[in-house]
Figure 1 (cartoon, rainbow, N blue to C red):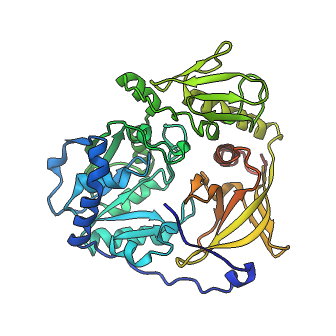
Figure 2: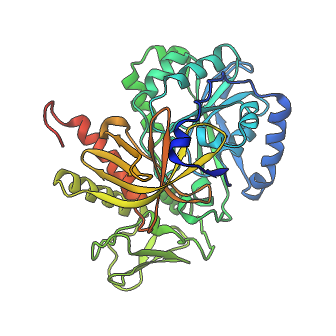
Figure 3: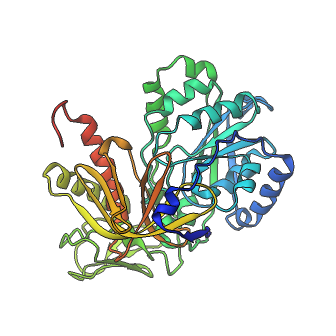
Length: 427
């Protein structure tokens, strides 16, 4: 999927008027039916099925909050199949509205900025369930999983549940990540997909728990491992491109410790520095082809990379500095390409400079619990996004190097370290 991109000088982009807030719309039955029909071909191709658990507790016309894990582009099609003809508004990233705002609003979509505090979003969700009598679909992880395991959830989620005071329904998918993992470059595999749909919490059960207790329950619900599930199911992925782009996730060699020299191609992952090589097997395991394996499970390797990043941070060695091409989002008419610059990330947070010295933006480590980063974003390239509720800056590394995953890990670990540091002590 592509998006509209316009080249404009940085100063001209800054002068563009901010878009006016618009309340959500209840999606029409006609559009819901159209989305459902358009979803059928892909859902048939993956032999999609689902099972309901306790859903008889939800009234036919009762609004609810639908929470769903975020695995691949098929997720929305799955939701449309499960809940049709029930109306639901969809919380989605504001860049998804670019060039198609009228259509997205007619579909009931509610825009928000990923990993940016957004009080307006909560008000829009309240309006949807109370005034429009519509359910709300929310992907609380906000971003797709890189390694097939859960990404962090916001601490504000428990408070949101208590404000909405509607039933909570959980949709957990199985096979969606294996069907189209983000790292694999938009190459779907022939994998069956299914889902469990569970009535998770009633309004009374929500009222009886604290936000912290609700957050803990949701973290348990959002605990999964797609590669482990594949192996337990004995699900064989025979596509010869299954390791394409795996270096985006497994960017650091566990043998020579070199970063940015891994290459995922075909079924193999190879270090360009020391030559160590792994095969991603049909069952989703890692098998060393020339020596002893340091890891046999993709999430274990990714977890080790996180530990390495955390060690760099605590020892004061972590620092990212790279030349980037810069795009901006200030309205829903276009993504604006404004020039180039330098992105820095260290214990003090992010610093973005560029556009001939006009652009200087800083973001503290405490600004967000995670980072909006993506692979092959709208077919433009691997991307790191920072910004606030007014402006988002999309940074595209000019020389590759697979820095996207590490930067997200560093942002998450730096946030945790900042939150846990005693007052008056910097990380």
